[in-house]
Amino acid sequence: MWCIRGQHRRGFTLVELLVVIAIIGILVGLLLPAVQAAREAARRMSCSNNLKQIGLATHNYESSTRRLPPSLCIDLTTGGGGWSVHGRIMPYLEQTNFYNQIDLSIGWSQQPVVSRFRVPVYYCPSDPKGDELRDTSSTGSTSGIYLYPTTYGFNAGTWFVYDPRTNQGGDGITYPNANMKIGSITDGTSNTLLAAEVHAWSAYTRNGGPPSTSVPQTVDDALAMIGTGKPDRLLASGYGTGHTEWANGHTHHSCFTTTFPPNTRMPYVYNGVTYNCDYNSQQEGNSLTRPSYAIVTARSFHSGVVNAVWADGSVRATSENIDGTVWRASGTRNRGEVVALD
Image 1 (spheres, rainbow, N blue to C red):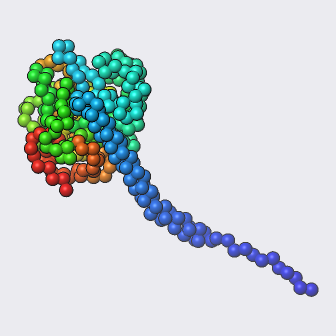
Image 2 (image 1 turned 90 degrees about the vertical axis):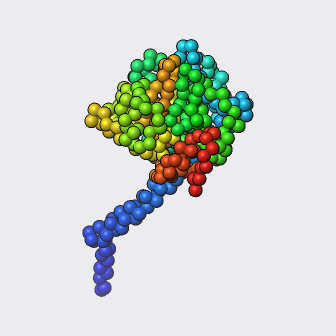
Image 3 (image 1 turned 180 degrees about the vertical axis):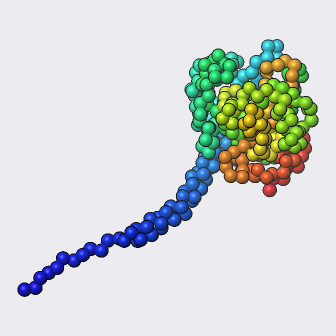
């Protein structure tokens, strides 16, 4: 009789298994950067859409009031700050219900309804700290208000921001107590910045100096300015509390300046920690005699560029390698400079 023998099934050898694993690893290594790039492209597009909405809301505010929004309103008899542009354009960002619960004539820190209120359009999804709450009481405030950051600042000009002695503001799109019409932008709305990206939880010094009112020309000049400010808002983690209060109209919380091109590093060392630092010589409204000058640089987490919305409502990605003179000209509304971005 014939005897049927069982057939052996041949499995993977160890070498073959290792080869398969290696191939899978190579494929994952090739695909992962593409996936990450696709995700960043989506985040960058979302960021651009946020700025588009902010630009449209600002235009709707101007159409309704016949004025561009001030960075904040200051009582020149008592000092004190107030609501940011972000707070003023809320009705035009489908936030009417919230807007109806606040009073712009009363400081945001006195209105508990603002605590923990988040406006998604006010932060870029690429910023890792863009949705990190700040307890304002942790830095001396007694308001007990928790605020979300903003990663979009409005254009406060090149350097000089505001002088409470004369109620005069700088050369940007907004400043304290501003009463500007869009026709004030004689350089052309397509040539003038409205708002740009900034980093949440940015480091800054404040309320000191400047040693000179001349526009700083180099990073070393800027570091000399930064060194005259108080470092009381620098955190040991390497961050700071700048742009952590979306409702706050101070320049270091809701604006930027074009003193230096986007993403310019300002390596300020304090207590052994190196900070990428901004500067505000005087919190607007905290003094009735001291003018404010600011270096608050536009920054992003997109590689090589910063997104910005211009006064005509268009959104463009601007290279961090843009000529500094051109970038400063983009921040002025009526200086007559020729802006050539391409």
